[in-house]
Length: 105
Image (cartoon, rainbow, N blue to C red; front, side, top):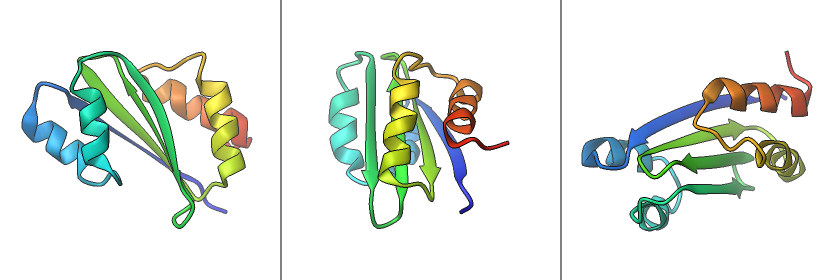
């Protein structure tokens, strides 16, 4: 198994950035509706078909999506459990959490 981690970021008030940010996200239009309120958001989704988990964090101004591929739903849940106390707009912290949970390095 080769796990890949990818992070994207956008400013909520920048329409072009948001369009680019939302384009690869399944049901991105639903996520846009949640983000439009400008409130902090922390959510996760898992796609069985692609074995991909997406973790979305927003502080109400900036939104980040951390995508982890080639993992099981159980691994995604373990990452979520470890991440839920951190929930930061910090790719390094997220990557470290994933590495610890999946015992990568």
